[in-house]
Image (tube, rainbow, N blue to C red; front, side):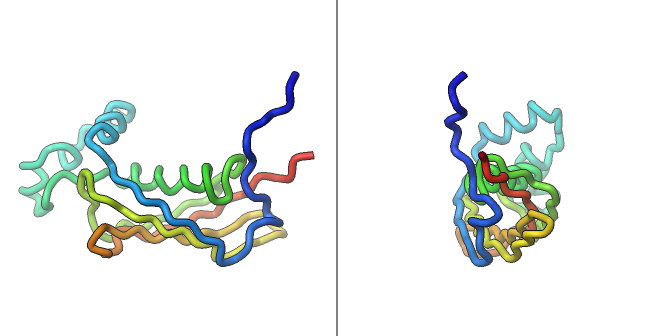
Length: 147
């Protein structure tokens, strides 16, 4: 059987406090419909313009779990990367994100705990007006060194 050729993320020894990453995303109507279909979440705040406006929003909003998914997938794909595992996640959703709005997520490693083999990553999300839309802290266990 051939060796696994999949890329591995950074190990705990390779990660330093201050390591950073920036990810920019826009959630399309298609992304929202896939989410709503998979979760059977029929909250009209997520898809109905008139309903959202009656509640004081500019339009339908992006479900917070989709924003959380962008954060956790960035941890899985990029920092620390493949083989890492999210072990704790917290988020504060400061202002709504609307459909097709561009959000920039800024990640920074704020703590490396070699004893517990975890890293703590601070995440700030901002819209194109540079307004903070979310703050998050992710604790992740980086992949172990492969032999």
